Length: 432
Ligand code: DLL
Image 1 (cartoon, rainbow, N blue to C red):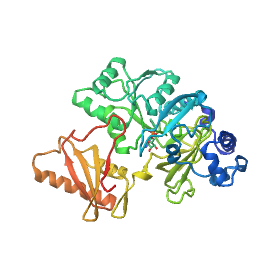
Image 2: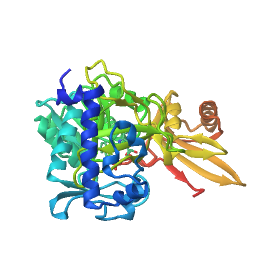
Image 3: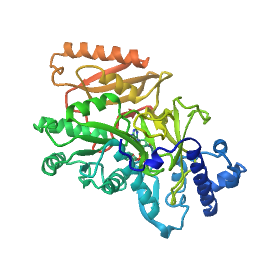
Image 4: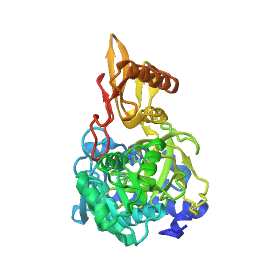
């Protein structure tokens, strides 16, 4: 299968380790010399850059946290003089307030390469017309995908987010072959387009590059069947670069991590102890080439599993599973841990359920109450309350079996829950 950077994508074992170690050393030196906040953390741990001699020393380095970006907002994390900065973006604020990230010209070039790499792995070629429905702006999605796809030579349509009518006309008029955006927005486009008689399967669309939020295999199946495309996942986060940390190849068997740019570890979210490959835990990333804002052992909060075995596609970089949720997304309901994605997976296995849901958690008479609002299909929706009650009871039983905790199900009429243009917001925890 075609690779964008075959040498780097097939690097593994001792060769990869040597490259990573050299780049890690250089990154630590830069942070140290710039006096960036991480230097004081190293000093507190009694470590200088020279203390890292092998990969086994990585674990001795302290973690970096999202909070570090917030504490040093706006420019405290810079490891280069500000005049070298050519671009700013911010995190979309998955949790809490904004974090600012900066890029040098070199960072932008590397970022473009990273995106070109995963997009090529997903199957994008120079003859493609790529319609980007990520918002352009402070969010890294729009601009990140834009330059990477252009570098491949694809014709980029910077549609940005929202405006469904325009998106649909652009697909027809320009013959867009690749749709780029959040899975949530793609679902919305599918639903709206279908209700307006837009023929997705007969359209030029053939491939989806979706990311920026967790989505289950059930959503993938709906997008692939409904749009007649192959829907691929890609992952990234602003503090580390934006999109471009990892992405699926055409085989869709895990997201290939660009390990010449990032060291990926998985740790136990509670103890911070490194976990063996193959175990579920929190992804921790170290940047190896970032100039403006390098990060060492950044706690992403994202839960995944790493597989270091080679992929049938020929790439030898490690792969991470689809993100299973965030450490701070986990709901504790009467002592039981519940991830929103578990709810999604269960719901989408039920015939007649639409992929639009919302989770409300509250406390009633000192007890945690989990409520799931979910839309049903036109076929299932009925004015007969007895029918609806019976169906809700079935959904509740499925959720109870899967989650081990009772959830009250409130069935909603089709197309009544709010649709997001960017990332979906699916939880309201009233206990907080
Ligand atoms: O969402 C960067 C991005 C843009 C990635 C476009 C892919 C495509 P932030 O806004 O900083 O950056 O949000 C980062 O989003 O820590 C994850 O929790 C979540 N996330 C990103 N990609 C995925 C994915 C961008 N493929 C946060 N699956 C991350 C699950 C994802 N979650």
